[in-house]
Length: 415
Image 1 (cartoon, rainbow, N blue to C red):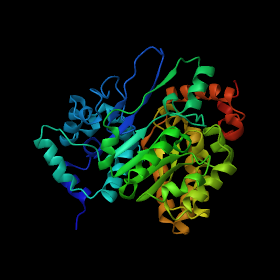
Image 2 (tube, rainbow, N blue to C red):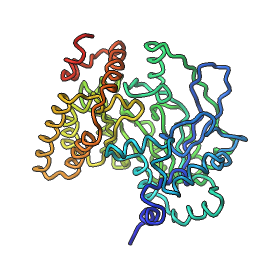
Image 3 (cartoon, helix red, strand yellow):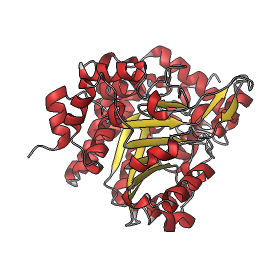
């Protein structure tokens, strides 16, 4: 029997995304150059959709009404018409899919399909018949703060307070964080939310996240709600375990972009011994469902097989591999042909190893990485941007790129 998602793809095409119809990414803070500028909360279909100023603002103090403005309707109509690849706002997913990665669109659709008892195709048809208007969200992402203890090299100030500090100090950027309370219908909408994605920043360090968990538990909503949390595994949520046990299901997405000095360079502030210990405690907690997320960059791709070996050693079966998206020039398109050959040779050697071990998941992961190289050509302009970026990163790091990834040494000798 075909599942609910199959029916959606059959009726509306396999480029459909469920987020604009059933979800809401709700953000209550912004970074501005002038602290006197009033900042509205925003609500948009997902966390990775491009934020066009003003298009996603919460109006009339209502999240519900804002989800039915003309911009939201236009996005829904584009998906219905099969024009996903033309939606500029969705370029993170189109970029990921173009290089052979597992895009957030795929992941969201499957999560919705697994945890929501909804006839998606029927509800989407009702939306079409109702001039592309929808009712309240059944999936909500809550983004209360960019508070984070890491300053990852591929991150943006809006996603990390530590990164914001770096940008101000090293790049002379301007930026002030303005945080608001929630809009008037936020808590009412929670009564119908079945999946709550808590994001940041580092979710386990945000006071707003803890306060919201308490509200949901105290109002007897938790037992019917699935929650997901993004974490960098800098800590283990021991003090929150009793709270988590009140929820229907708890899903962790743990960011691990390599091992040893590689992750310590790419995710500045990380300590591999701490990350690996906490990550494995989360993975091995039977009350959690956990996925490891590996963001591919021109830094960590040289040691990708070390990461694959770590997954194998610890019997980790659930993981995703995705390209860097905020700064594309930090990805594999910045790698010149002589270095590309080194990476490809290592991946092909690893592929033979895991084919022999008959580990299909890790074999497919390596094939995904090789596929990315097939689809993404070297761009000399990206190399120059990469070099300039790294020179500034090295100013703030205890590690230098060429010490962590010596393969790059010949391209930084003059620096």
